[in-house]
Length: 129
Image 1 (cartoon, rainbow, N blue to C red):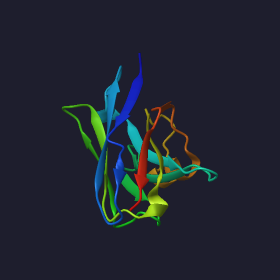
Image 2 (image 1 turned 90 degrees about the vertical axis):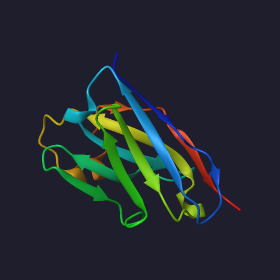
Image 3 (image 1 turned 60 degrees about the horizontal axis):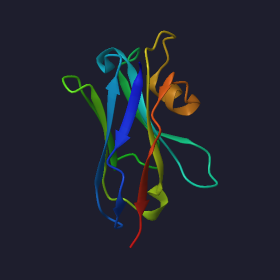
Image 4 (image 1 turned 90 degrees about the horizontal axis):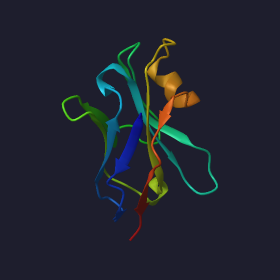
């Protein structure tokens, strides 16, 4: 059974840091494109960082560039979202996603279109003083 489970969401103060994890089961992440998305109340879903296995590139949304970093641990079959210098506008439910990348999709396109085949259920991140 293909499954993605996020963890690490929390309440954090402005300027703080947080690392989200996403554990994959039922498939091997090493061969997949992956990404992190977020959705705040009343807003559209936003792709914050994506890796495309076709172009081997990493894309970040302008809103998080320089503050967020996505990574993968092949041994643990997990992906991560390191978030630094958080601000209240980063408050959202964060989702991880993965896709076998059979359609030669670039990292930026993955983030802009959200065309991942597998999604986690999300973890809440709240940035507040």
